[in-house]
Image (cartoon, rainbow, N blue to C red; front, side, top):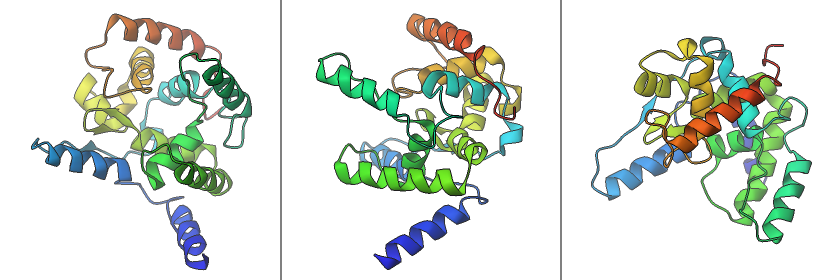
Length: 214
C-alpha cells in the first residue's frame, strides 16, 4: 500500500510538468489492431496548451463538462441526473467530468468495473489537487482519442483539417468536440448530418463559456 501511494503520487507530480506521450488506451488500441492483423495506427503529437486554438478548450467544456471551471473534479448534479435517467430506463448518459476522463485516459484502462471507478476517483482527486485546471485541460486535449488511431488535438488537426492545432477555427473545434462521445463511430473529417447538428448546438453553447485563460 505504501508503494502504491508513493508511486502513484510521484507519477502524478511528474506529469504535472512532463508531456504524456503514451497512455494505456493507446497501447490497448495498438494491441487490438495487431490482433486483427491490421497496420498499427498511432498518431499523436504533444503540443503545449498555448499552441492549441483558444476555441478548443471552450468547445470541449461546452460539449462535455460545462461546470469544469467550477467543480473540483466531480459534477454531482450531472451524476445525479445520470443515475436518475438510467433508473428510469432512458438512454444512458455519462456523468464523467473532463477531470475524470483525463484521469482515466492517462492512468487507467477502459472498463466499467467498480475497481476501475474507484481508482478513477482517486486519480481525479490527485490531479485536481496537484495539476490544476489548465494542466488538466492541456493533458486532456493532448491525450484523448479523437479518431481511429488519432489522439490529441494536434494529430486530429493535421489528419482531418490539414492544419496545426493553433489554426483550428471555432467551427473546427466544435466539430471535433461533437465526436468525443464516440470518436470511433463519429468522424470530424466526414461528419454526418447528426454531427453537423451537434456542432451547431455546441457552437451556441460556446457563447456562454469563458475562455480558459479568462
